[in-house]
Amino acid sequence: MILVRLPGEVRDIFREWLLRHFPDRVGHVMSLVRDTRGGRDNDPNFGTRMTGEGAYAVLLRQRLDIARARYGLGKPIPPLRTDLFVPPAIDDGQMSLF
Image (cartoon, rainbow, N blue to C red; front, side, top):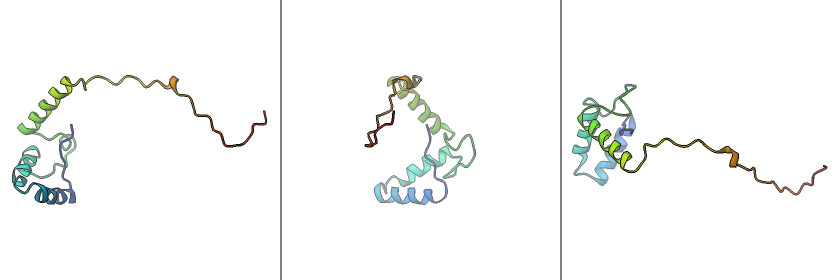
């Protein structure tokens, strides 16, 4: 899971979008973002900037884990079978000499 990140000018674009489409929810959404970012709109620290921290981030992670288990999304991806690949024949109009 990658929690919403609002670095630099993205924060202003996101807020403007929220104001335009969900003006009654701007305060609540930004409050949740700050709860997962140590009180800030963005967390630049490696290790927490993608996942967030705090109770709401833990809740989101738990919900994601439940959904992954329910829909079988936690299974490893099988290895790619390259032996099934056959390059397409190229017909460029040029005849072969051999």
